[in-house]
Amino acid sequence: MDAHQLIKDKQIVIFELDDVLYPEKDYLLQVYYLFAQFIEYTEQKNAQVILEFMRNEFKNNGTDHLFEKTATAFEIDNKYKYNFELLHQNARLPLKLLLFKNMLEFMQTLVVDRKKIFIVTAGNPEQQLNKIKQTEWNGLEQYLTVYFADELNQQKSEIFQNILNDNNLSSSDALVVGANNFDEQQSRLINLPYIVSLEIYK
Image (cartoon, rainbow, N blue to C red; front, side, top):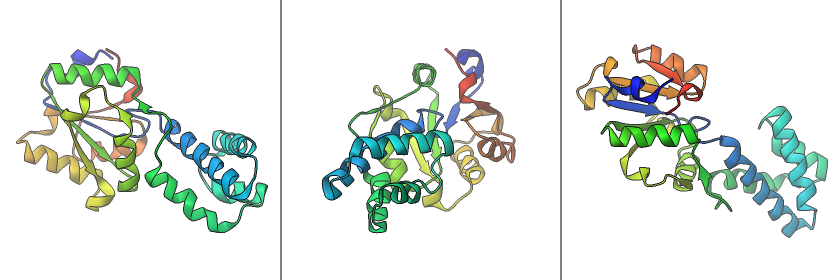
């Protein structure tokens, strides 16, 4: 869908972060790489083999019980689960996270057209902030206002409504860009227009 047409009558656009602005796997796979390196250093187990296992498990079954499955496969002590979880929150990534090309171009269009940009993201606030800090924003960071739903202990729909109220806007003045049913449901609760990020092009 044409970006200019989408926003011609909008004042603000609200985004989720994971799998909307960037691919979340780009963060997780780097965390797994760092964890495998850590285990090799502390336990002298082959990092490459561990990483390959984690990649395949993630690809086939997602993140559920990934540490436990890896620990069982390689006889890794359960005490290292703390390190695994901590890395998710504060990992210093080898590579910057890159925005989806269509999202980068869309956000640049928003800036040129003087639209306000908000990110409302769910999940561990420290982890989400870590992702934001290690994303290559191409200068867009100065135009972002970020809300962490879990930190505020609010539903996204409540935060959406507060953003509208704070900017003296109605739901028709805004657009939510997401990637899953939950984001869409939260938008519909207050009649906010919603679009899936993959449908946007320049």
